[in-house]
Length: 189
Picture 1 (cartoon, rainbow, N blue to C red):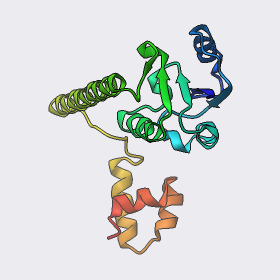
Picture 2 (cartoon, one colour):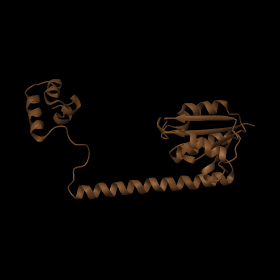
Picture 3 (cartoon, rainbow, N blue to C red):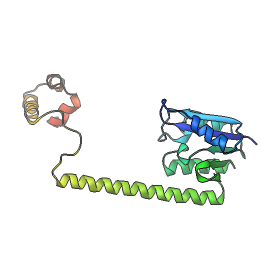
Picture 4 (cartoon, rainbow, N blue to C red):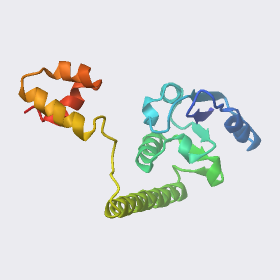
């Protein structure tokens, strides 16, 4: 049975060399190497070119080795889906970061569920902190969101000219903003 290794980096400026070195130093004899470079972890694993190629080549019962869990995906749902699909094919998934733990084993599934729960809690806490910060900023009178492209005088001029029949395109050119900005101001009267 063959052993496959998968590595990924998010930008073209980065290299997968360190991940390859980690896998080799862990003592794995890798038959096939696959590396996605310049591919965000937000991209679902099955949509990454090299991971897709790996899935097309690996046979049931073989092994995939990765250096870290986040190489398989950035969120718990994506990682979980990927691991379950591989487990259904009896493909062993080894993550060095977790101490050579096979995520398709019972202990690995437990660890994956615990990691998913922690990741979900972290996301919830992040949302909570963000909402709290936004509420505080609003209470302090800060304007939230993207700055407007026009000031009060320009908006009044846009509304007046639009009421007089001036076209949205002409107003956009006059004020050097997009048509969408003009339509937001006028509400398309």
